[in-house]
Length: 389
Image (cartoon, rainbow, N blue to C red; front, side, top):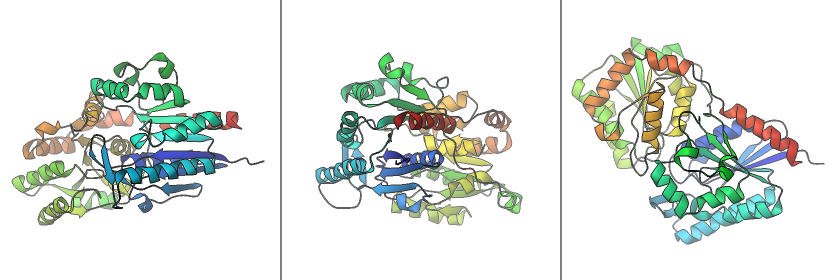
């Protein structure tokens, strides 16, 4: 008798690094004896990550979001409808061949442009697969989320097609049940896991204190919308001259070439160490004295895992998710932030200087913070393993 337990994970990954990084973090921790994990992803850079034994991926054609509901292929030059048809066919065929015991969907309940709906319907009819939706704690502001979920019939999908909903956050920090008016039939399926920890790199003292200077790491995640933050940071260094700290800048692979070249040329003049993509961000985080970043869920989980002080510059469009998260974290003394509309050389330099020299309150809060995400997910997978066979 086959004793393997198969987990299929879906990460639509149209833009940025967040979804695939979260999926990889969960997969690497859920892996144990007798468990196989297969990841369906549209990430164009999934091949740059290291995949341990028992974990593999199936790459579906990548799509880029042009506007709210308009997507075009990332690389292949074919009609978007044709590209979506290919994606859906691969997803459906993979699910039926792999025969998963558990299907974990990241963030998008119906998938990109409804692409996983046939698979979810098949799983419901088949009765073998338990379906899990993984949601970050904050999707968007309450009014926008309620309207979006109502217009798209998301509440019905959550009610009808998912066995459980894992919320990667703390209900006492932000309560989506209350904020998004989630009915009881759905809320009773919701499990708050807490934040998801990331792999921690050991601190390297020589790197941290090169030339006796503290280290600021500035990162924009995928980088597609990170230019204004990095531009403001370099303008601050240009305006205020040499500082008693040094900087490593990582733009991310999705920043436009023109913007990247502008930043790299200016960074060189300022003796700022510059990277387009850095495979092991945990190494940089471990040695930083301050991380300047945008407000993405995954970046902050990585920073918090390394017990680092963060200055968040959250974007305000196309959704308010990052801004709300920054406010929630600031209320908990887990980070500081600059509202996007107040971003400028003066405000960023003032905050950086303050946090490098006066971060005791934040460090105390971080040291008292507990990650519970993986423990809760392990418990749930253990339950399903016992009850699926």
